[in-house]
Length: 292
Image (cartoon, rainbow, N blue to C red; front, side, top):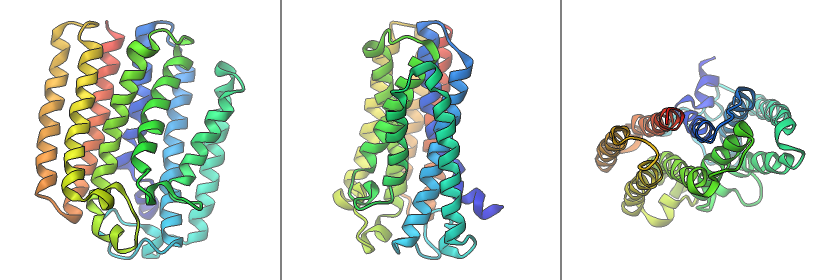
């Protein structure tokens, strides 16, 4: 089971959970929180990210972009631990499960949700597959901002509360902040793989703009994200809650400093910590918005 557990990339799954948790906090603040659609949103988000992770491993192997002994997390297909056909079957099965869960949400959101579900499914595959893979042309960061930030936060808030109140004043700004933090997880991943990606002409933003610029972007994303969060929450809760902002800023600065002095596999723990920092922020927002 170890190769399959590695293929799931558990360290990155907090990224998909964070958007749903933040959306749940927005729903609780608006009022009328409903548990069942929230749980379905969380399950759908996790399954969609797993589809993307498995598809990324399968298609990168088929396209000759993965090799044995890579600096990043072990790839079971490239290492020969998992057959390509088995990985493809896993992609299809997980995609079917995600579609089933997504269809259950139609009860609360209506049939038009199928369009969003289709967009999520296409993104999960198009990130690594198709004639123009997003992750190969510097578009992965924008896709993460949209599909791990804006869509899960806004949809979870609406489906869980049944209301679009405070969409532009609360929910959407927080979705952008969460999306930017999610982009930082991808930045660490691409920064770690920059030499390998450049060698196979995989043009991530790290390859296009270079390591110095991408490190700066990591820092800026975090500052903009926490600035948005402070702006949205400062008048909605007592100042004691802003201790969370201060804690985030300190940890973010420490991780950014470590990135500058880390290479290759040394960045794997930083990637995991960046994802967990995002998850921690989403829990803090959930509590802040639920209790105020």
